[in-house]
Amino acid sequence: MKARFHLPSFSRFSKFNLCFAELLAQCPDYFREGVEIASIYGAFPPSLWNGGRTEGGVCDKSYVKGVIKAFNDRGIPLRFTFTNPMIEKKHLSDDFCNMVMHYADNGMNEVIVLSPLLEEYIRKNYPNYKITSSTCKRITDHDQLYSEVEKDYHIVVIDYDLNHDMETLSKIPNKKKCELLVNACCNPSCKSRSEHYKAIGLQQIAYATHVKKFRNAPFDEEKLISEHPEIQRFSRCMCSGRSLFDVTGLKNHISPDEIWNTYIPMGFEQFKIEGRTFDMFNLVEHYIYYMVKPEFKDLVRYEFLNCLAENNVIKIVE
Image (cartoon, rainbow, N blue to C red):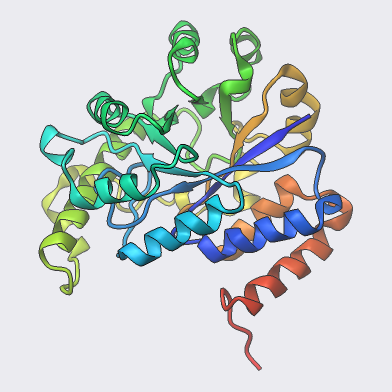
């Protein structure tokens, strides 16, 4: 039995995830049966190709190389969220994104794709990467989903509006290559979700372009929002700030008991925990909720927080 979890943000939460990986390696008895870290997903800012969540900041070459090595040396792939739906041909030659792809091109790492244009470019120029089909495609038709699973993808991330459509899920031809997003914070059946992804894509392109031209000048996000109604419309969406205790009440939520009692027996083994924009303590609770045995939750929380403090991820006030 395997429960392969894909965890958020190798850039923002690099030390956080390394501490968690160490705890899992040293104390496997604390964790639920079959728990593995399948990948850490995200993007090094300012990746113009990034999608799904806007990621700010700047990473230099040494940081990029160091993070790739730190996770890959542990046997953990990085999975790049290159799902920006607003990619144009002129963006394919982006220096930073191609630099990242070059440094991580070792046969271990992976890419999540949405844009057919970018997918074709990556397949042609970086054939060593395993390719994941993104949930951002919003595939909710069952025949289209089955067709997607049959394509040349390493993993297909299922739209979370299908999380409890057991009739559709039961007929998927190869469930082991399908990934379920278990803790979606977006409203179920949100009709604006695809448009929101486009707005995020425009914002990411604007940010990456600004950093490239004016590395030391602050990025005026409010000005960008005011000039683009499509971005302004979603600038106050509060869904991404939901806590674990908020999302458990959503109808697309998958609980730990459902993972082990329903989905794994069906043949699924890939599970994604959302959280690139979470605060650190919300993410701690998600990791413990999903991957730790109930009787060890308090102990793991204590050990994990101690590890984070020792590695200067959180500061202790004395």
